[in-house]
Length: 217
Image (tube, rainbow, N blue to C red; front, side):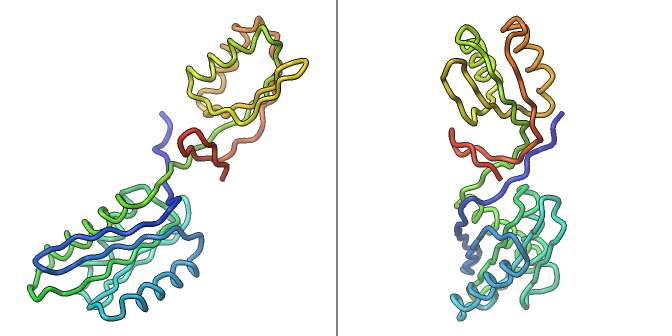
């Protein structure tokens, strides 16, 4: 069984919730380093300088190698940690989120704050464009025109993205095949083309699918 895919932000976004008249505005941005995350946090603090709190969390690295969060004056562990937990639970990596709070005059208590900051991050993610980070093995295939229909059937049946195709004297097609499906695909291709298809297996790559567009990472 393959691991759950990592998600990342193709586009950041902003979402807002209101809890007992307090506004919680979550702003998310993709980042690739801690320096980028800290710069974004400072930009948001300047933008919302009049807010009571600008709490933050960020996750750097596919395996969440670097995680940081801040309560920014809220009671300990009621803001930054719930925000970080929401980010981690979503599977999103290489991202920073700042939740700006405008106090509404009613105290929420520690439980209320924890839920509000967590829910604000979840709402912010809903307004972002996210993509799954997948792993595929590029397979270059050369076949004759008798085999192309069978090849494309196998590709479509397995939902294997087509990287490129070239129709000349022979047909050359490059597919991305999941590692766990590679042996089965090669066996099915050999059977379908009576062993006439030539294949070249390349090193695994990371990619995402944005609709039908393949984005190599």
